[in-house]
Image (cartoon, rainbow, N blue to C red):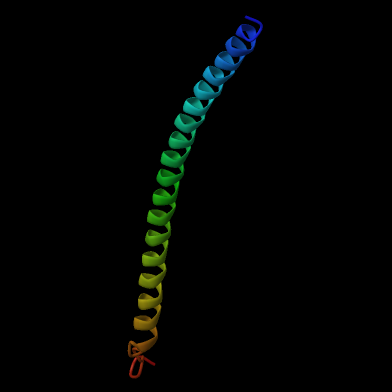
Length: 75
């Protein structure tokens, strides 16, 4: 009978440990989901920024390569 309080405390401790583990796993899943959403959003925005930068480089290159109009005869 002297072991009964030890078993009760041990069972209560295991129950608390299991509850904490389940809660921690749930929080980690939510964190992972949020992290994934942030990473996806960041990658999308980075892709758009790269596309805009590429379009700007093309526009500048086309403007450089375009023949200049001369004003000969307008003097």
